[in-house]
Length: 222
Image 1 (tube, rainbow, N blue to C red):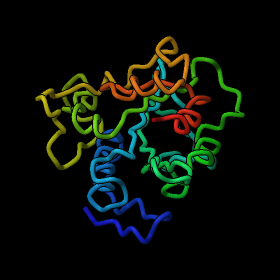
Image 2: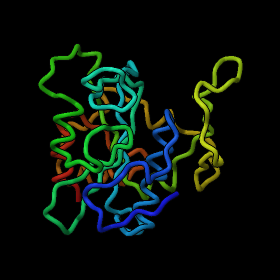
Image 3: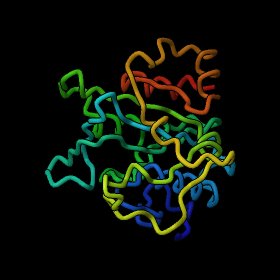
């Protein structure tokens, strides 16, 4: 994996990072690790958050995606994963690191949401997108994937897996990806008060919010 030069912020080349198509959860895991190792983020990942985007139907429309064949870049993913960086001791806006996006890398959170989520676009209720926000240090500790979700009924790969070994959780768990992508409107936070957020963000699976809550969440995180 190539190193990242801090002085190149905020415009970086996404190709400097390890990326395997259709393995966004692993790509973001390694992205966060690299940001920590190269001093772009805190060495423990305390300023990084892994964000899963999905819904109950596993059909979430996102714009400006590299995988799209359309001019507007729209793709209907079953789920997507990005990283959001929020510097605790800075007034700067949170940054979104999306390896699959055609937008600037990284992008300010507000502009990313406007361009990628297109909140003014009227969607049917079943396509509503939810966001599971997980603190990176907890993600490093608990996340695991043996890539079983990328195998067909006959055991063949739906998409060629990464060349490195699967990610195993620190406690030895081999696969829990489905826990992160499971989302329901009934599980979203009803309140973004500081105490609720403090408790939720300290949990393995973080906090689940709607797109209208996401930006506000990053202004209220402890």
